[in-house]
Length: 272
Image (cartoon, rainbow, N blue to C red; front, side, top):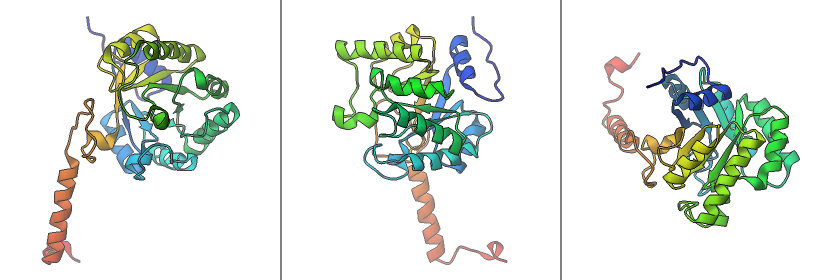
């Protein structure tokens, strides 16, 4: 028996937990600027993640590590000004919470106060539990992130699938339980075996959103530049491209150049 889909005028942390309870999948996409966020929100997305992936797709860095807290606040502020319905979740960037819970709280407070976002996301499990607890004491909602954690890329040395081995899988399951117990409202699982992700999602009461974690979780997230086909070098198995904007935009730019060079643009109707 299917459950009737509840209409939400505004998505909150409570809404996401209800969606898991009711069996409704959560749709999440990244966005980093006002114009894109406005379109995504209007389409009916549940969550916009202002991801530290902005370091890659907006700034051109090889990893997510270089992006700063000030830059994340800038991107988040732009997104918040655009939205009417969805929840805005912001990544705490590398170096703003690891190993220093006081700094973690200060970083999270800055994001919430200066951008107007609704929640923050941190990568890691037991090793950052003190930072998560301290942020939560301030009433700031926290989402966890386990599996492939891109801020630890130099530790892993590769973007390959995580938790395939029994020991790492056991730690991931333990960390997921811990994050729930600490008070996180949700969890992102990145690039882990589908069977493990399903097991984790079924073992905890908070929603689990996957990226490369199969369809047994409570929702999905993709980087918007990837799913729109604006990037074309990145081709992981989990990525479905819904458009090929790289080709379409390239064609439009070439046509514009030709029209300007040939004096076809602007024509008489396009002049004052």
